[in-house]
Image (cartoon, rainbow, N blue to C red):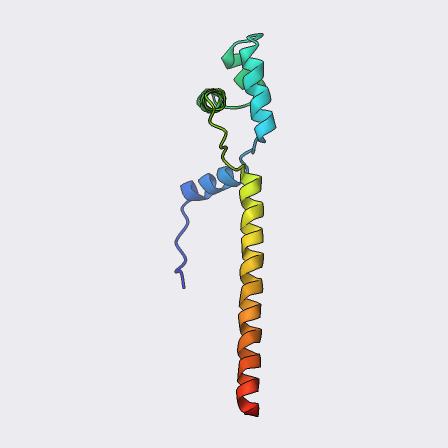
Length: 117
């Protein structure tokens, strides 16, 4: 059992910021990067418009360009999105529970058959 840690004010604020952080979908990230590529406004203005840090934008931009480079070079494998990973984890958990249930039923049937003999 975990022992409760004393939460400092700084940690409390960090936790609130972490939980209230906006999550951008991949489509939103692509839209923002594409808007920057059109060069209709500066990167600083674009980041202010979407209330994101410039370093975050440059990270998305780099990921976008790297993915395009991989795709054009013939690398057809792609990484799963976080939604796909979450869905696969749910399915994995469901299958594990089914196997556990079947093993339990098998043990019950096996024991009941051994009693009858």
